[in-house]
Amino acid sequence: MIEFDKIHLVWRQGAGTRRVSVGILEKISDGKHVFKYDADVAELQKTDGFTLYTEFQDIHKQYNGNVAEIFGQRLTKSDRPDVNTFYNFWEVDKDKTEDKFYLLGKTQGLVTTDNFEFLAEYKLIPNLHFLTDIASLTVNDPRLAKGTIQVGDILRFELEPTNPKDKYAVKVYKGDLFVGYIKKYHCKVFHETGADKLSLTVKAIDQNGYIKRLFVKVAS
Image (tube, rainbow, N blue to C red):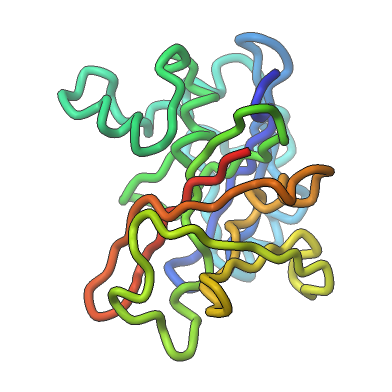
């Protein structure tokens, strides 16, 4: 069974702003993928200053062929000496490191030169495990102080179906302390039957006077 066959291309203006899906990269069969922009991209260009992905300039076209390879150009190079550390951090299956679609979904395709993210819609399969970073940390009031959360801490989650912005919203807590939300689209798997058994374990923290980023391992 595969962990995911659909990845949302997500964009935001900058840190602290809302994430919006601007397109979907989908696996049709082994080695075959398609990409298409969402219907409201034209409006987003007008209102939010969204700029199309360089290699995909037609908002009405469904792109076929080597789309995963094109997006895969943003991935960490496999010949880097620290690539195994990178794979271990992102919970990458070492047997799938040649699969660009898989790597984009597992690592979110993050680079420092743009505001795109690749967020997979995970499926609840046996031995599922993936890494996600908690959303809304920067809007907490007060913000979470350094040391509030430690690597290895077990967190808990609650569904929030009445959330006006996302009916799939999932809130994350340490005990009774509200931490933030499961990242958009990563949260959908928490609504599947049996998802109450999913575990959340803190894997890495970026902090100075307060917690800036919090990476959590999700596992079935």
